[in-house]
Every structure is written in C-alpha cells, then in structure tokens.
Length: 65
Length: 257
Picture 1: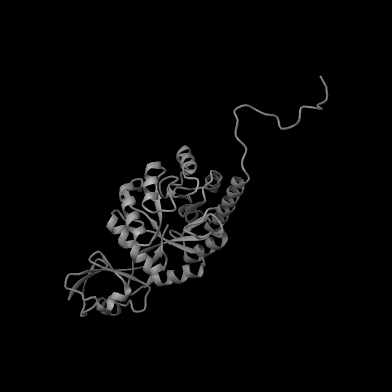
Picture 2: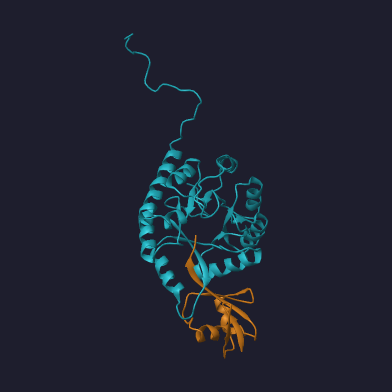
C-alpha cells in the first residue's frame, strides 16, 4: 500500500497505524500521530485502518522556543 | 508572582530549548538559569534516527515545567491539531498557542488565535497565547477562556527588547489580576529586568541565550536580571520626576562662600 509518511512516499505492507509505526522503526517511541491532518490518539492506533494514499504524520519532542 | 493556571512558579524565567550549539550546552544553560519552564515543540520524527527520543530524555532530566508550543502553525486547524498531539506527547494541558499570520515579523494572526484559544480551552487545554499588546485582542482571549496572556516584546528572534513600553504598561494596568508574560523579542538581560519592573510575571526567551557566545553565562545573566526586576517591582519603585531633587540634606550645610 502506497502511503505518505512525514511527507515521503513509502510502500508499506501494513493494515493499521500501529502496524505502520512498528514497521517503520517507531516501536516504543514517544510520538504523536495524525492521518490526513487529523490527530489519531495513541489508544486508537491499533484499530485505525490505513488506506492507500493516506498521509501519515509522526511527530516527536523537539527543541522549541 | 501570579499563578499560572493554579501553578506557582519558582521564578519568572521561561526558557526555550532551540538553537543551542549542543545538547550539553542546552543542559548547562538550563542549570545556570534556574528557569522554571522550558518551551518545547513537536517535529517530524525519523524511524531511523529517532532524534526526538534523545531530546525527550534530555528535557525530562531538566525537571522543569514543560510548555509545548504550536510554533510554525499558520491556521487554526493546524494549531489545534498540533496542540492535541503535544498534549499527548508531553502529558500536559499547557499549550503555548502560536498562530502566525505574517512571515516577516512572525506576527500573530490574532483572529485565528482567539478562535483556536476558544476551541482549545473548551477542550480542557490551559492556553498561553502568543499575542500582541492590543487590549481588545487581550480581552477577547480572556473571554475565550485564557487565564494567561503573552504579549510580544518585539518580533521573535529580533533581540529588539520591549518595542512598545507604553502599550505593555497599559496592558499591565488594564489587567491587574491576569498573569502576563513577555514572550519573544528580548535580546539582553536589562530588557528582561525592565519587563519585570513593569510588573510582568515572567519573561519567555530563547534566542538571546542560545545564540549568545556563551549561552550558559547569558542564561545566568538573565536569571539575575529577572530576579532583580522582580525584587525591584515588589519594592515599589519611586515615581520619576522632571526636575532635580537633592538627595543630600541642605539643612546644616556650612556657609563657605
């Protein structure tokens, strides 16, 4: 399934958002997620089914002013 | 010092975590500053580098209140979504709400700011809005549910200090019970002291420390200045006057002509 992950095109063989995070190296990481511009809380990731073309954002703590 | 949504801070220094030459210098600067609040952000994470995870460990060890921001957001939807993501990651209701409306000065879009503040406060957030010294906007933000206001001193990263002393003094006088923070534009400790002398409850700065030649030393200087300004404000400064008034008693002066 073709997806956009943080703006970059990827081809991932996954079903859910939780699967995607594990497959792409985010397992256990402190991150927040959004799909197509909408926040997806962590407890909902396992049930959130991705569709081809979805734009997934994975954000983490970063320096800020 | 007034409380911030029921939280009493040890001092009025809020320090940003961006632009430091290294994580070690960031840590050193926070230790020297004694800052009570650290501002943080969210950015895209790489599954390979996982750089955000190291930063998360670093800021947790600082043992300060975290104030996540919505820096770089230009729309209400973007800011609100970012705030929700920040609340989950940083586990805090506090959000430094920025809705930027103009690129050259990074001036807040105050219309979007009020709308986003209303949405977020209704959803349980405790909003710290990055705003201007405009009293009408400030009133709208309070009506939207904000209990703190953060007017800019000058444009972000400019180091110009307090651009509109009159406006800031008016804001302080107009909202005597509202915690007020000067957010952005400070370049020197003397400007932070001036803000505190005006009666502001805190200053929020980043670039002035991070971009100094010696960030840790500058952090210490800001801490001293904030403390001095706070002490001075509490000590009830004298009223300035136009004409001289001798401080040495005239009575008893020798006749030596």
